[in-house]
Image 1: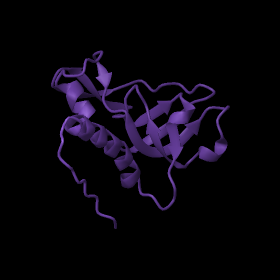
Image 2 (image 1 turned 90 degrees about the vertical axis):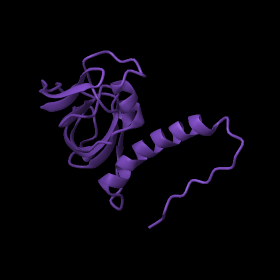
Image 3 (image 1 turned 180 degrees about the vertical axis):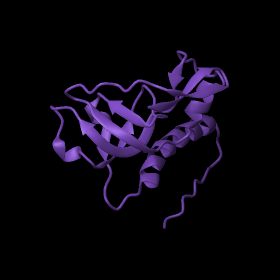
Image 4 (image 1 turned 120 degrees about the horizontal axis):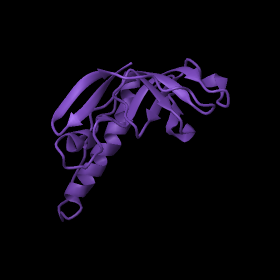
Length: 144
């Protein structure tokens, strides 16, 4: 399985990684989309300390391809939004924390679901920038 690994500050490489075995509560997800977040950029340039080497990313969307025997089989072959603190810039993500895997509704695209992760990250970044500002700020988001 290939993953994008941060090997140093401002240094990454694509490496072949061993597959993580399934535990009884695991879900294995084939990754479809991963947002590049401000947090990832801060880790890359050293503003956020991180243990090196590490897999970048903490959110993604994908399709469940395997499940542990204590997980619901109804998730198999379903699209999910997944949060994984051990990195998501990889071909397949194994999640051992059940609440951090959320099924995606049929009328929501993978791109839109992935945007939820980036949207929250952007909102937090904007909040930190404007929290000491006494000006009114309008955030415009087009509705389709």
